[in-house]
Length: 115
Length: 114
Image (cartoon, rainbow over all chains, first blue to last red; front, side, top):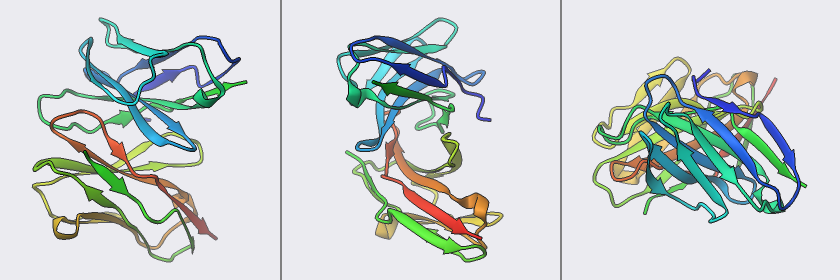
């Protein structure tokens, strides 16, 4: 158990819908990262937040957005869902950025299926 | 930009065999970090090891060992006396001080047969 929690574990929805994935980082971790794992793209970095502020963006679609709240939990919002958005979405957390690349600990993931 | 290549897509071994998973990285950063993660059939990503670019010491942890060679830009992972529970997808990843993101290889699926 990494200490990172993600809910829900599974999500089935229809095209055009909007969903919210939730992540709670390990106690004391200030950075939260979101990754998407799909069969064709592999594991791709989406976005990073540090202490409530966006720090880095990767291959995140405009239909996707995220935020980190004052209690440090994070939400990833996916809207206008398409079949191709079906994937395993991981959240990871690390202590900070101040000491270079910190080890990221991953949650169990949310498996999204868009029908 | 960083790039990580895991050329072995799938490896199948019989229990108790030794197996090495290859990882080759590309980076222009002078300081960088390399990682191995394990993804068992249950789906979670489990951190195994981290290596900093300025520390070329190899590491052994039980049946696991890692060989970091800057000269060949490789960070290979060896499992000695493999067990069925080692069956999983193994990912090599790279990160840098400039950005928090990790760049993952495509993963190597290891199947250990009894």
